[in-house]
Image 1: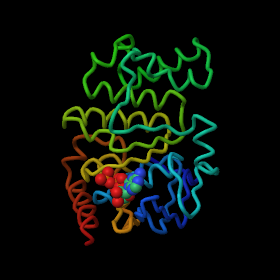
Image 2: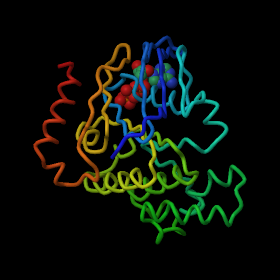
Image 3: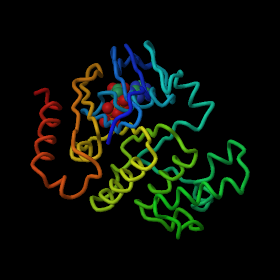
Image 4: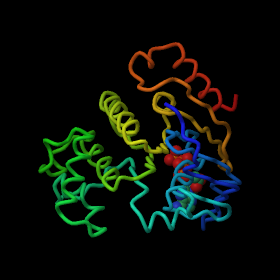
Length: 256
Ligand SMILES: Nc1ncnc2c1ncn2[C@@H]1O[C@H](COP(=O)(O)OP(=O)(O)OP(=O)(O)O)[C@@H](O)[C@H]1O
């Protein structure tokens, strides 16, 4: 897929020191282009979530420049639905049905019921949950709950989707289905995706670029382009190219 030249995210010289004194990130530079699918991988504690949260406007950098869609990210997060978030926990409200969970961001922004329902129908179709619209979360599997969470993040039609280990708690088969669905949504909607994972296979399979971080303090180690064309399927996963890319990322993770 052709990459668009515009920058979705521009991070320059970003340092993050928590109140506890932990230096989580030191002088990080990173640019992410519009329409890219970028994974952040790295050892536990290297600052992946910290960096994601700063980009998403959910956390503040101690120093440095964070520009998202040309604006300071915290401002953007507060004022528009242009940024979507998905975390490892689906965080659904148990007393609300699937529809009611998914429409929540629109409800909070004062969007009328008719328009809300149109948007919700659209995103429920994308995640293939249209038959579960009136179910409560307790009746859903882990994978279905994650689909609801993804639908909720898409309902505001965001330009950038931030995902922090969204599939980490799911079994292999469910994860594979969700990979396919996520890639399809990404391709259709021309989203920019920033995806944190521990899983090198997942990172290579999904991403147009893998960013490898190193720790103490958190910094960008290297960036590896994944040039395989989309759509990607089982054939790609079984290919020698895939194996070589996984090897390359694994070596970079080990500092090789
Ligand atoms: N709210 C916080 N307060 C203080 N220190 C924090 C906070 N959040 C993270 N840290 C510290 O900052 C560093 C980076 O943490 P972060 O969660 O960003 O890493 P990570 O790469 O996402 O880790 P993991 O892969 O284990 O989820 C760690 O040393 C962590 O202990």
